[in-house]
Image (cartoon, rainbow, N blue to C red; front, side, top):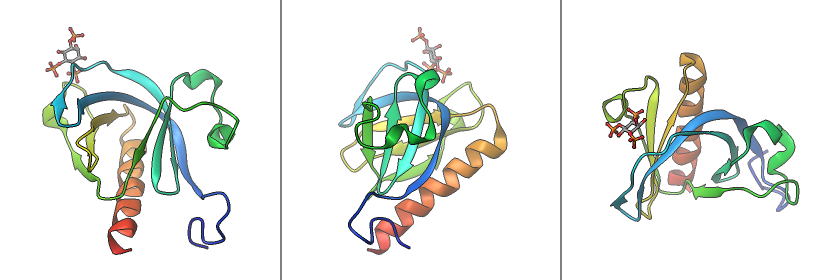
Amino acid sequence: SSPDSDGGTPELEKAGLLNKTKIAEGGRKLRKNWSPSWVVLVGNSLVFFKDPKSQTPSSWKPGNSRPESSVDLRGAQLHWANNLSSKKNVFKLRTVTGNEFLLQSETDLLIIEWYKTIQSVIDRLDRE
Ligand code: I3P
């Protein structure tokens, strides 16, 4: 079924550990501060949790854990961004509000799967 088609809890698409840094807030450039983040793709949102060690795939469920921040994927843009970092496997996510994040993994397949999954959600929202 499509996410939230029954008006209930939105569908968990993907969850895992990525390195993350926010590089812009409302279009204003920020200093990089890479840290590991538990990333959850659920419904139309990418949700970030601070303490990866204490997180499990069920952590996104309401009441289980407080997210550090959350990104609305509607209208967002995704680009490979290896030019923006000395690290490998980096992509940039830009929200409609001008917040920009870099996400990275040392594992090629893992970052490719995240890219494809996030892009598919963005594409689905573009079609709505
Ligand atoms: C930054 C830190 C980042 C690095 C960034 C540095 O220094 O080393 O890891 O980004 O490079 O400026 P500091 O800790 O002093 O802020 P990458 O790891 O993504 O390369 P940059 O300024 O070229 O973006």
